[in-house]
Amino acid sequence: MTSREDGQNSPLREHAGRLEPLARWLHDHGINANDVTLAGLGLTVLGSIGAFLTNTQQLDIPKIIPALSSAAGGAADTLDGRVAAATPDRTVAEKLDGKLLDTASDRLGAIGAALFRAETARLRGDEVGKHTAVINAVVLNLPSLARAWAEKAGREANELDIGSHPVRWGLGLIATHYPTEGGLPIQSASDALSSALSITTTVSRLTALAKGRGEPVSKQTQQEANRKFKLLLGITGIAVVTAAAYELATAKKPWQ
Image (tube, rainbow, N blue to C red; front, side):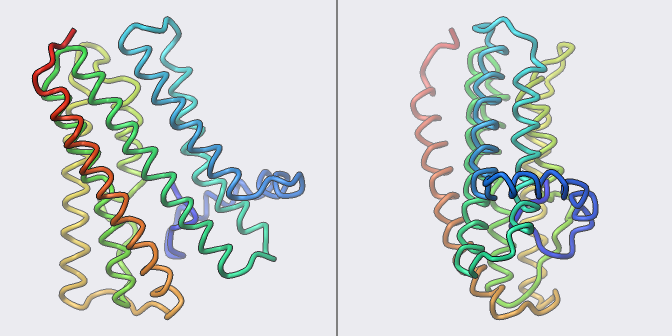
């Protein structure tokens, strides 16, 4: 999805502009972009928990209900940027803090969803599904980290690579809510593909940076990217430690 961290070169912004009336309505009723961001995180978490409970048969409700919650969380990741644009009186510091909050909530929500998928796979006795979900939790943040690295070095990274955020978000949504639909290994395949795309995009962006490709960015973008890089590096560290702890904790446990 588009979000407040997206660059101006994204054609998805043309579609996000359709949310302008809703964004202005929210702004006029005292709901700011950070409120929307946090609501989106909450919806994503609720969707992930709901998917876990329905897919482990601990909650007898249609799968579409938690799926809609996750989809609404993703929509909020687009809407918060429009609400931010409808608030022109924010300071530079407030804008940057909003972007960082958006980045953190989006990535932490995605990591949490991946770990819920891992536990769901473990409970159904699918070790491949478990490990592919854990790997995805670790690598899903790397393309954004590489982009921030390029921007803090003064170069623009290609936003819409094959493994860009909208593609990986869609794969994660499917894997979370319909992991074995029709008896197919959808979750393990989706997570494996998403991880491969994340790694490919990361390598592509770092290679472009090493070769000096990409248009120069402004000093302000560099400064913002420096803070974003530190945040993303910390989140990546959290993902690695959490994934390793989960693997160790479940290595010798029975499936049931």
